[in-house]
Each structure stands twice: as structure tokens, then as C-alpha cells.
Length: 94
Image (cartoon, one colour):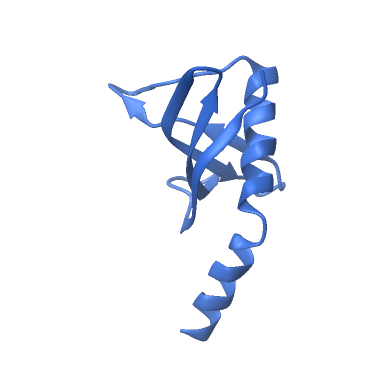
């Protein structure tokens, strides 16, 4: 089952703590008949990216098997495309 990105918004948020990734996008994904909203694409200092969900009671609201997580992260990264460059450009103009 291939993930389909339904909505993606590029954001620029610094890491919440040292060693944690910075959030570069918020998005929704469709997996078959299930749509999941409020996911975050995080980028780490080594360049790797991960998809994470919001927390409920200190636990991730949604988790994925590694293979599915990689597919979602890849699809979100492709959907993000050049939007990060636009954020950086707008910040440098401010």
C-alpha cells in the first residue's frame, strides 16, 4: 500500500531539545481507506528525516512499521520539494 500525501505545509521549527529533529513540515497521509492528519516531517542534523505523530498523554498518537514509515517519509519529502528553499529565502529577505 503506497501512501498518498493529501495535504502538506512547510514549516520551520527549531528542535524542541538538543538532538531532536527540527520539524520541516506538517502533513496528512492516506493509507488505503485510512487518513491520518497532524503528522510531522522532522529532519535531523545528519540529514535523515523521520515521520512522527503528535503526542497524546506523552505517547505518539500513531506509530508505523519501519517499512511503512520509510514510505511515508519518502512521499512527504517528495511532496515537500522546494518549499524548504522558499522558507529559507523568505527568512533571509526579512
